[in-house]
Image (cartoon, rainbow, N blue to C red; front, top):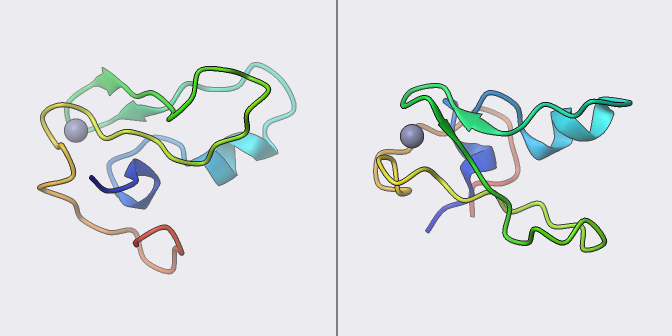
Length: 71
Ligand SMILES: [Zn+2]
């Protein structure tokens, strides 16, 4: 399964989210209108992996350009 941070349909990547000072925007798939989840829901564990939504499932990914999350 691919990291959804690499998909261009993600509304906000982990990197972009980390720049927000407060009221973090939830990750979401803009193509399917689904909220996405991290690898871990424990806020003490910082994890950059975001699961793709069930419809994308990493199968139909269109990679963002210039992003290091692809592999
Ligand atoms: Zn999707």
